[in-house]
Length: 222
Ligand SMILES: C[S@@+](CC[C@H](N)C(=O)[O-])C[C@H]1O[C@@H](n2cnc3c(N)ncnc32)[C@H](O)[C@@H]1O
Image 1 (cartoon, rainbow, N blue to C red):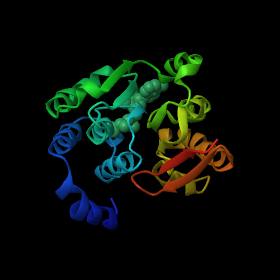
Image 2 (image 1 turned 90 degrees about the horizontal axis):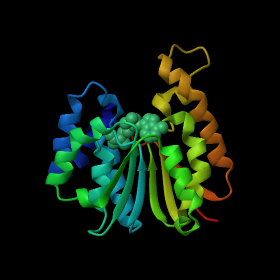
Image 3 (image 1 turned 120 degrees about the vertical axis):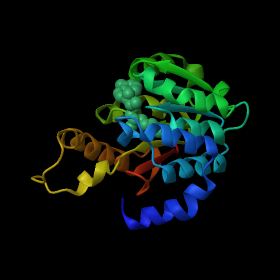
């Protein structure tokens, strides 16, 4: 981690982090796939964003142990909702007791399985079009453009889709022959393609932020 991020974490994030988020972060740190978790500064950013846009009806694709899910659940009002999807229920259940203890589990509708068929079902129901205030995508990068095709129908005009990992461990600026881990190299082209497609998409305004591993916010305008 670079020193600026460490400074931000120590000065602004950890002192204000909700105790449940701290507990979940510490549980997740012991899990073998902990590299997947949303960083604490990004969690704080999500909470601020959700409150600023008064989000109520939300979706999350890619839950893992639930750090960003808990951030979302804490930021939403009492009657807020999160449709959460992940192929892996076991990891979600690792964090679930902490989410329950924080008193926000009632906001979560967790669906186990691949997200794309769930989205296809929702898209069939025209009443669901334009109903989501916020959608956070943090799952299989090779499907982001497939998600985008569907999510653009589901997010409301003025609502926001956040795509995570759009800097993909810095690999988006690595030279073609750079020594990269296999999974980084594999997904890099998908992330590069996504970034170009989002920049060209006239239905959205975008803002790519260097928070965490890069988050691109897309505000639907038409
Ligand atoms: C980077 S992690 C999510 C991290 C999470 N947002 C957090 O705050 O800890 C990516 C997750 O996407 C899930 N995933 C991968 N492919 C998926 C798919 N096709 N549909 C739904 N979830 C998927 C993985 O099981 C994994 O838990």
